[in-house]
Amino acid sequence: RTPPHPCLPWRSEFESRPVAAPLETAGTESMWLLSYTYRLADVECHSLPLKKLFQWHREEAVDIETVLLQLTMMAQDYERKVKMLSVAPPPTPRDNTDGDNYEESSVVSSKVVPNATIAETLPSLRQAITAQVPHLYQILNGATQTDIDIISQTLPTTPWIWNGQSFLDSSRTAFSSRGAEPYLYTVPPNLACYSNLLEWGGVKNAF
Image 1 (cartoon, rainbow, N blue to C red):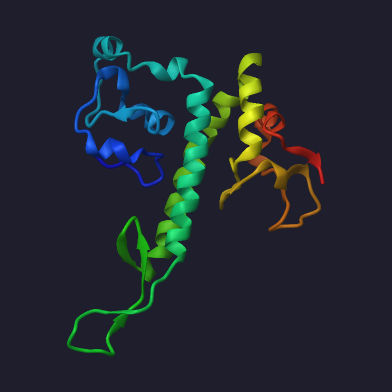
Image 2: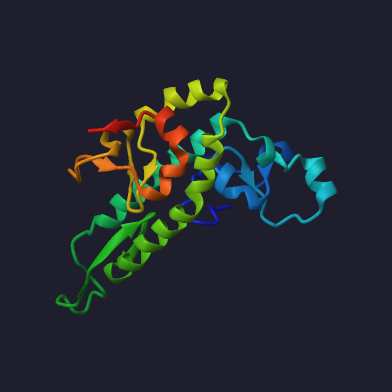
C-alpha cells in the first residue's frame, strides 16, 4: 500500500510487500508514531482482544529509537517534498496541435501537478506536521536517563525543530536570539513546554 498521508515517513519496500506478520504491523491509530518502522494495517481494528493478540498496543511502550527515527524521517521527507514542489520544469504543451498552448507545472512524487495547486499543497503539509509533531516531542521530552544519551547523540546532527514552516537543526536555534533569520532562529513559543528535549537536543540558551 501507499502511505495514507503524504507527510507520513514511509519505506519504499513496504509498497512491494502486500502482506506482513502482525508483529511487523501497527494499527492505523498509531500511524503518526510508527509508520516508518512498522507496516500499517489497511483497516481499523476496534477489537481490544485482537489488538492484544497482535500486540498492537505498542504505542504504550514504544522505544525512543523508534520515535527518533519517525521524527527525523518526517523532517527529511518534508524537506524533500518542499524541494520537489519548488522545482517547476519548463512549460509543457497541453497537446501537440497548438505549440503556443502551455501549462506551468511542478513535479510532486513523480506526478505533474499544476502550479496553481502548490499554494494549497504546502499549507496542507505544514498543517498536518504542526498537528502531529507535538506528540513525538512529548514522548521524547519524558525520556529516561538512559534514553537521554540516545537523544543527545541523535538530534544535534539533524534538523528536527519544527517552526511551522520547516525543520531546523539545533545549531541554528536558541532559547533567546536577536532575530537573525534565516540564519539563526529563536525557539517557537509553543515548543517551550519541551524544554528538556530542547536542551538534550543541543539547543543553546542564546546566540
